[in-house]
Image 1: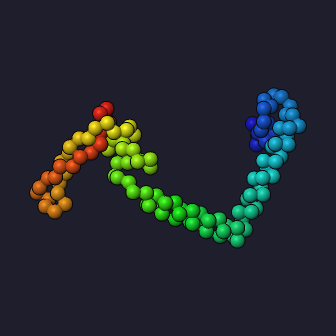
Image 2: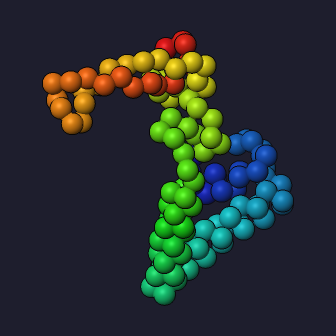
Image 3: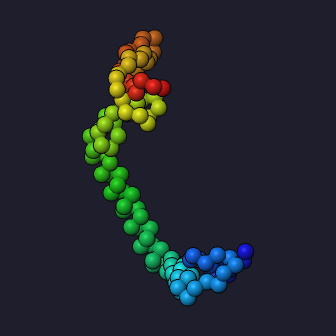
Length: 118
């Protein structure tokens, strides 16, 4: 199927049927919107403004998430999740051994949330 047929059949019309006037208008509007946005993004001033907005929003989001006091195994709602599968909610805590940061020959017990299934 050619791209012009796809544009003509953008709505509910099947490939063998004639598209309705509404479908044709919808396809024409989509084509116009696509070309308009390509022209808009091609302007250097618009591209620079978009880049600035994107950087600003990324920075704001990063600051917002950094301000939330969370534990290592908590989601954004403050609920504990399993430290092993990282999907299911935690129902208990298990004790594991890890090497000590101070002395590599020693081990330290740490408590980790566990879902009981993985």
